[in-house]
Figure 1: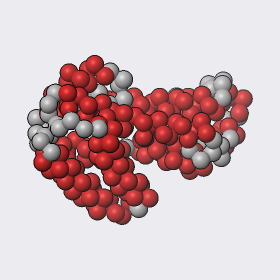
Figure 2: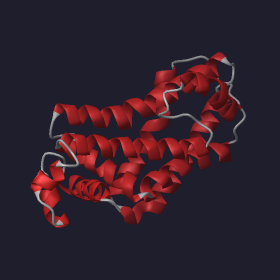
Figure 3: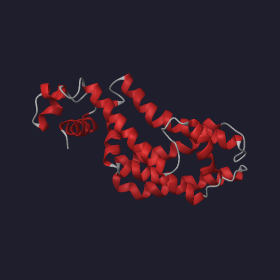
Figure 4: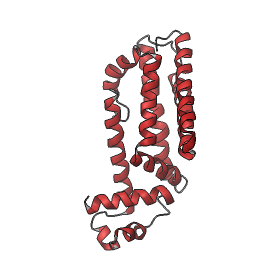
Length: 214
């Protein structure tokens, strides 16, 4: 592992424990046995370290979602319209559950993703900018994708016309709530996974009763 990679690893470890503001460049350099001057040879600022961590996390999530043949976080709404609508138009209840649970399991089991999530959870209260980063990543991106997907499914006649933004919130909010419980209380992982499965199955049934084949 290169010095730069070691710096990023140590910074993420400390950010996830103390938050961005609670971690100094000296805190990062110390455990690595290097000076602050040596650290600055690789990164101009703590902010640059933070941004590289976020960028790497997004690469990991994009790669994961590509395996599911969906385009969350890619910014490719045109691709989503053509491919994701096809994926979800004929999906079964079990298929939808497995897709959601695959995302949840990845988020909860991948150490890097977990540290980034904890880093942003702690840091969101330390500055408005960090709070906006949290909202953008864990609220706007998730709800934005679901809203656009439901909108396209409505246009395609797959689900009954309605407010896609409201439907997205109904679908996503319980998932992120149970992920939060899972994060704080790992011994409740099985309980949370079952609750998420039950929620997705109920959502599927409710939507189907509204006239959907989702």
